[in-house]
Amino acid sequence: MQFKDYYQIMGVARDATQDEIKRAYRKLARKYHPDVSKAPDAEIRFKELGEANEVLKDPEKRAAYDQLGANWKGGQEFRPPPDWDAGFEHRGSGFTGDGASGGAADYSAFFESLFGRDFRASGARRASAHARGEDHHAKVLIDLEDAYRGATRTITLRVPAVDAQGHVVTSERVLNVSIPKGIREGQHIRLSGQGNPGIGEGKAGDLYLQVEFRAHPLYRVDGRDLYLDLPVAPWEAALGASVKVPTLGGIVELKIPEGSVPGRKLRLKGRGLPGDPPGDCYVILTIALPPADTEAAKEIYRKMAQQLNFNPRAKLGV
Amino acid sequence: MSSENNLPQDPICILEEQTQLTLVDLCGACAVHAERIIELVDVGVLEPAGREPAHWRFGGGSLHRAHAALRLQRDLEINLAGVALALELLDEIESLRMRLRAMGGE
Image (tube, rainbow over all chains, first blue to last red; front, side):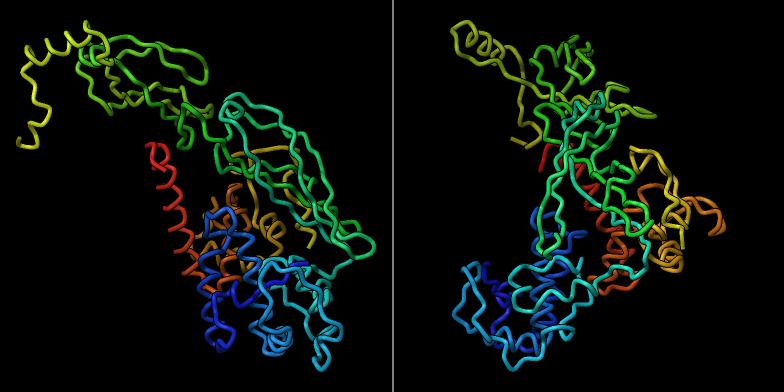
């Protein structure tokens, strides 16, 4: 198992006062709280932080931890020295966690080897003989096309469980999930009864899948609306044209109005993600310049320079 | 309370769109007493339809909002007004982030 440097996790010196530790914890907890932070590792950081705080905020546990010595580095392979805890009364109920910081069963093996695992029993679990199973939460990454048409996806979930010997084992559970047509990013799919089994006659919990979209090469998504950058030629923008536009539902014709400028936003009504009402597809015009890589092309550019009285920087006053 | 067994029974659904929860459903799903949910309504974190608590109907999105509010309250020791403010600001950041992405920035 790996050594955990709780002082480093908390960003405090080994001789920090209890007040400094409290302040550091509060600050970092706000920063890494999974409901606040979008950082992909926020949840792991927050759990680590909770564990570090569990040890350092309690003078007795902190003293026991300090006894291991200052020479350990975070991540180093660690075995607790025999009798390391002699003289500290923390085995058993003395060190039961209050489950206050995010799930009592989430302490590391390192923590458990030092402070035991009795805190598990006293976690947030309700003591009743019949209780509904816990809900499970997971994220599922889908393609925009799946949200447009609906799809069936096979999802593999890693489920941690405690076996008969009390070890934490992960088992894999494979589920076929149908993605409802028109689902939007950030929404949740609920699968009734697919969470943890209930206790006694309690019902199983539910499984919640939070939907996220894989980045799409063409479209950006805002709710049900889609945004597409559409390159047009200078003459299409200047003179107007009818051009082909790819949408999720297939190719459609779009009329480019005469005198369009780059950044002009044209709306294809109802061509976004399906729903009631369906979203729109916004087409943002960009102007693509033909390369001047042949003599004929150069000649056309020269002609434009001579014959168009055009100063692109007129607004800058030069 | 047998309330926690009363969540609507469709096997698969989009939580935010196809679910209506009663106060009892929500208490059961969050494993808290009704007072905690009523507090969240009073401070404006949750906005059910209907006048009386007995007739309240919460949209499916309320479930995650209630969970987030309860977690913030517990983990960061913030009071209800602080939780409400934090959630509003987080919503605003999220919508700005989406807008930014739609505009092609990241």
